[in-house]
Length: 453
Ligand SMILES: Cc1cc2nc3c(=O)[nH]c(=O)nc-3n(C[C@H](O)[C@H](O)[C@H](O)COP(=O)(O)OP(=O)(O)OC[C@H]3O[C@@H](n4cnc5c(N)ncnc54)[C@H](O)[C@@H]3O)c2cc1C
Image 1 (cartoon, rainbow, N blue to C red):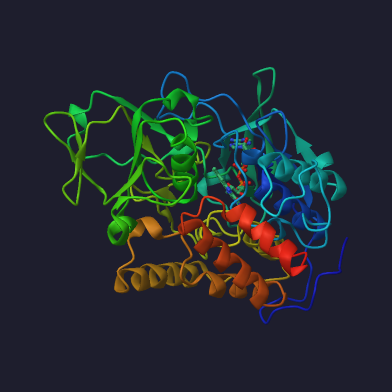
Image 2 (tube, protein in one colour):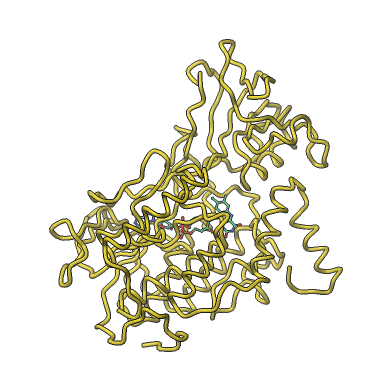
């Protein structure tokens, strides 16, 4: 058992109970690092992965949902040309050769293509020993606590999983860590008057290449990292692109930055008019061919049917203590990888360390009521500051506090100021709409002779 973890947090308990048998659902970045941390803590780990490879989202899948462009028939949401929106330095795991200083798939760029991240994750799985614990083509179809509860000692969770042959087997585990990914099921806003729309609709989940949009007029709804990338890419072949977003109020009208030749910014979509045109909140209207939703994803746990854990219409998973433990089922059910708007890989790793330590008894949780109080307090503070429910798991602006809080639980140092700066600068670059930010950043580095961003 690896005892090399750093000094203990205040609530660490002294006695180490026996290792637990833990099922991890999913072998994406979150599941892989969760498995590594559980192994390091001495647990017996089985990772269930329904696809035929590790890497999750980063295993690019050229297929899309052919029958329903708003559907989620495949897991992956990457487009062919995708490069990371965070510099590679922020996409590694500690203690392992990270993406810095090492090239995995022949792409040494600061913002590499998706193949490089996948190759890194594969190497990480092999070198950390996690790969041996992964069962491929093994889909968890149900995870349930006996007698409906997961907290009491001696109880075991039953995990039903379907193998390649279609047979379902059931195995018992002390604990289940859910890492099934949250970028698959499209979140599609219901636009007022959408019944009058006669054109095509698609979600970015099913976007792969620009060619199908040639000579079309496209309304892109949403201005996240994917929305910006996709709008820029399709603008090279479309007749016009119209981006609708709440964040556009200060920059309405035609964009005059290279390479946006035919792109307009609008406020959010107001409605679909009687004549089928898309009307925007500032009053403009456009007769478009396609509405392309870049509006994010829904949390989805089809294998969990628990009476005190829900995903509501506003995409709030709750109640969840610190986005990880559902109080009623803690510590034997946990989630790694729910929060967004943070350095994701680092956040996965810290959450994973916390779960591993809680399961071994080296960190303690508050009582069920104490955790519920903390969740209620989180919701109350969100409401007080006017943050919508749909942002429950979006950590901005308190993302550093969250990372530091987790670090404290597992005896690690607070987030380095340098990493915080790199992340915040990367976000600003994305929002700047500068199409060449990835390469100009690279050039800046070369110019400064610095190997890091
Ligand atoms: C377009 C796009 C661009 C992105 N760019 C970046 C970026 O630049 N930087 C960054 O840090 N992040 C980025 N992300 C976020 C990305 O989601 C995370 O980096 C990370 O891949 C999430 O890892 P995960 O393990 O939580 O989920 P996933 O990678 O989705 O992995 C989940 C795994 O669980 C498996 N699974 C699901 N259900 C079951 C089941 N029932 N049984 C067994 N297995 C199951 C899936 O097959 C999958 O392998 C991007 C996401 C998208 C969609």
